[in-house]
Image 1 (cartoon, helix red, strand yellow):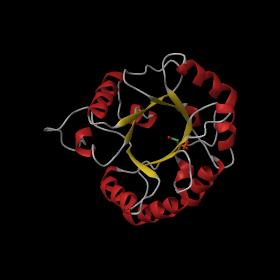
Image 2 (cartoon, helix red, strand yellow; image 1 turned 30 degrees about the vertical axis):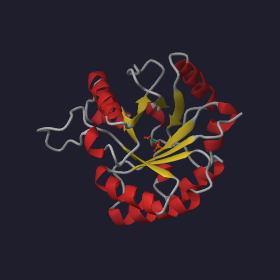
Image 3 (spheres, protein in one colour; image 1 turned 90 degrees about the vertical axis):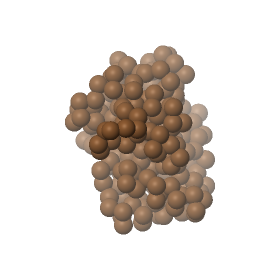
Length: 220
Ligand code: PGA
């Protein structure tokens, strides 16, 4: 049986202006009300506070997440965002996305510090792994399996392999495992059926509100 309460996550990456994202949140928010799982949107930092206010004031069934937090806590770290600074405005944060591991040389040691800072701020980390060998720090509840070959390529991993990796991850601890990598409205049901995984992390196909709504509707 598929998970009746899947996590459906929109990773908007460095996309969208404020004008665009404020339209997006209202379009998705209006359609999200009857969804039994958890819808999470990960905007860029500057939009987190205002989106949180919209979601609260309109009572939308959407949680706000960060795409990252700093390895440092508050202090003299120009350009960084400490987890404790966003503690009251987001419920989750992505940590260890492969784009950051690659483009910003994020090491396992840095990621552990980020996880600790998020946990101390009561922000639930969504920890990205690229395969079943990727180390998972202590304190993680949600693991996102995101094979690099599948991200932004239109070439998603196949459900059989996802199941194998998800099982291997679940054998290491009491984790919810979600999948990310070229998830679309056309293929999402292949991943969510049969309780294979507990949700999906969507990049490209979350940019257009209607595409993301179709993913939510298919996941009901
Ligand atoms: P994609 O991105 O859906 O564009 O493959 C997923 C991700 O990077 O989280």
